[in-house]
Image (cartoon, rainbow, N blue to C red):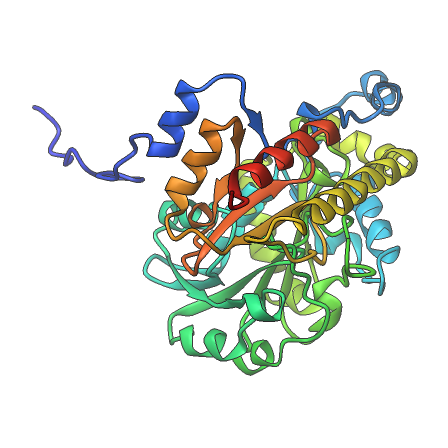
Length: 387
């Protein structure tokens, strides 16, 4: 007998998955400069191979599969030492760290941990297009709170309070924020009023620009349950080695630690080799990461100086991260704007890719190789400067 399962059931069933106009134009184009990439391995930022080889070598001689549901103890201890070096330090015990294969997997575990189908989570209205799909996969809703562009994209606390209801289970925060670069540098009073768990994504924490440092969010709200997400994809430019983590502050560990341990034990997604390498990566990464930060800072300096000469573009210096989210004053149609630039040989992302619907915005990645970035910005300025 044929199955009675409806044709449109499951993840994204019934959604229009056809390419949009920008993607179709991109596929049909050749020779353009891509100023959207956040992949460091495409732009000459390659972690030293010898450090990787040396870090991996001891694993092969003592290789045993002996998984720990929280992650290998030595890797978790290395992560706790990393947080002691942050400003201000975040003091954790190794059993407050859960190692995952990625921050995306970490989000998935936490959505499962904190919410039932039909519940909702609060997320910023402008953000990287990940949360929407993760929420759909877990059958939870997203309710968006506002980021205020006029105040450097800070959280609008009245909006945060207004969006919460009886089925709100957690608040999602990204600091430094993607794509705006905003860093939460002081307590958010509305969060204490809500009393909800907070999931804070800090994958860009080591890349500051206008801000002197990224305070670990858990140090700003020590009484709230805070789950801090990070990993080696951005920190060490190692997206291919697939290792992330969840760091629970004391309230989070007390309330949710046992259940999160069981959840992570269901998957054991992080591979043992990368976990075994992690202490050596932390110990031998300083020179590479310092050089990477210098290059990104120099690229942001250059891009902001160049864009200041374009009368229709306003780019705020970000607190951190490596993106510019520039406001374009003379265009209403972002899709037409991006296609206009692509026709002239440069690809950028429109603001609506990130949920921004207030005016026209462009995302420019300053992770891109500096000479390519310079040439791309020259094209943008020439294309947008009134003649």
